[in-house]
Image 1 (spheres, rainbow, N blue to C red):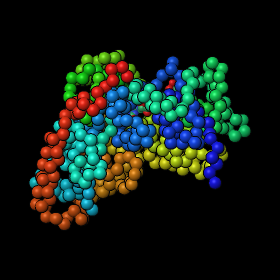
Image 2 (image 1 turned 60 degrees about the vertical axis):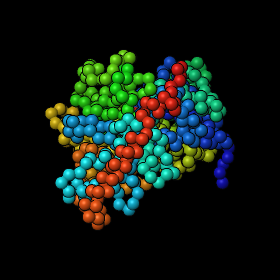
Image 3 (image 1 turned 180 degrees about the vertical axis):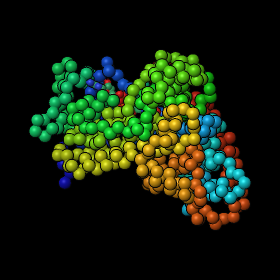
Image 4 (image 1 turned 90 degrees about the horizontal axis):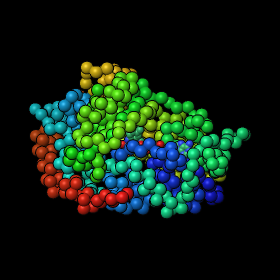
Length: 504
Ligand SMILES: Cc1cc2nc3c(=O)[nH]c(=O)nc-3n(C[C@H](O)[C@H](O)[C@H](O)COP(=O)(O)OP(=O)(O)OC[C@H]3O[C@@H](n4cnc5c(N)ncnc54)[C@H](O)[C@@H]3O)c2cc1C
């Protein structure tokens, strides 16, 4: 029988992870959790993380957040996918879209037909020409999808690009309205129970002692509880994801307000360009083994398309994750649990996945080891899946002439990724996953974009005559172009729907 006593949950840290967790627990488990958050304004938050995945909309909906209000407050734009420039070869360009290729319906995946035409006809347009999201993205158009419709308007999804420094304060308002409380102050020590090893309290510089039943470590890279106090080991993945720094600087917007994030290859990594309503976010993610901070800073400043509006800031990190995210009565969420570089905007998604796991497995007064193990298994699966997906971008490249790119294309990658590549190379098959992030279309986009092309196709795609496929594909292409042309310009849509609040 469910033990219905309330637990005091202490959330340590008030960045995106902390306030997302506080808001979600206060909203979704009001009868089970009293939520108290501790944060230090002097330490501050990491303050980057501007690009998201469509799953964030699900959480916002659950929290009862009004989209237009949220977008205005965080100066957000819409995001239909991520554009990769110069990744497989210099001059290459493709988008990983939020949506399907083709109609997304039917027994056989669209890419299998495309693949057959590629192998058997004289030429075939890039697969991106058959994606509604990509077509809209390159035309700078946006309209909301209609998931209930059966036509093209249901074949794409979207996420947001927003000002990360405004997101946590926005969530704080939501969480506090839902009853979460907060203490400001620097934590200087963690008190553990001598017998069980459980966390008993956090001790503040002011002398205050905050006790709790459950502690959620959202303290960022310092990993105050799970790392420092509980000593949970960190699994280092930098042999596969060697980028360990980023230099970030926002600039004025001179380019079009694109409804997509760009990730452009650089000598020792890549750079992001994220257009927001009031500025463009830029950052060069690089491997310190292959370039210096000074070189990275000057390489970034040379290529950004606008006037810098803040001093470039260097951030240091390491790819990997804590061996376990839930240890004793502490659950690590956000950067304290791990970090995979921002190439596919996955950190906020991982925060959300951990929150979902915590809500679903929220403990009774006694924590059942089986619940904790299940949580850790779910989080491991998410990290491993994303890790392989990210490595693919680097490993499947034909770029040459630079030590960084030579390293990544020759490194020994996890067997789990080699298997996925082999499976796709043979007949275009994507390893199946029913839910979570990066389902079939994501892998198809990145495989084909990185020039990993199948040698054959699903036998069922061999049934229709090739001429019929070519004709149907051409009709589809015309259909999505016409529909995109009828949509509003991205900037105009934002100006009407969610113009930014002057003082957010
Ligand atoms: C270069 C870079 C680019 C990124 N881009 C993206 C992106 O595009 N998309 C995406 O989803 N994610 C991105 N991320 C990740 C994203 O920024 C984080 O996942 C997100 O901001 C959550 O951070 P956090 O809340 O875990 O940590 P933080 O923001 O660091 O918050 C930590 C909190 O803990 C508090 N704290 C720490 N120590 C103490 C103490 N001793 N006492 C009291 N309080 C304390 C701090 O004050 C703060 O409130 C990026 C990260 C980096 C480094």
